[in-house]
Length: 163
Image 1 (cartoon, rainbow, N blue to C red):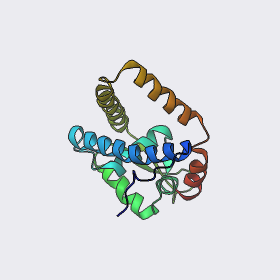
Image 2 (image 1 turned 135 degrees about the vertical axis):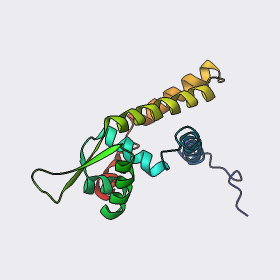
Image 3 (image 1 turned 45 degrees about the horizontal axis):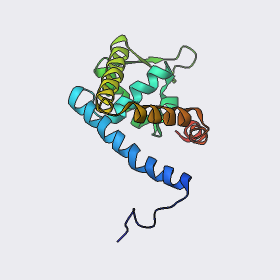
Image 4 (image 1 turned 180 degrees about the horizontal axis):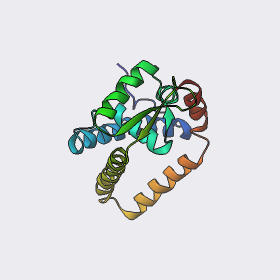
């Protein structure tokens, strides 16, 4: 049987990678639990990703949104339709190409996105509120280094080319 703690690599990049592989899924589980508990009308993580994506890149074409999320346009169209029915996004035909559909957040969709971000941030802050100041500083500095590094660059290239 595989024991992840047996023969742990002593190499720091490998240790850090192992830590990321354990922590990131756990963070997503907490995030999903908050969504389920506090925002039951938001039918899961895929809908949340669409709203968040549109808040960062308003008025994307359906094809661009599908590409960025790694799904087919018909699959994205179904997801977007659910969001339209809830009043959180709009679908409009492009003025230049009637076959091209653009998706944008409604004011209600933007407000929901902002509420989710605030709630998740508040919940995470409450969980971190029991930590010692030194530990919070170390975490904040480590995350700032990760965010500022080239760690995500190759993924951004993959994401833009393949969704």
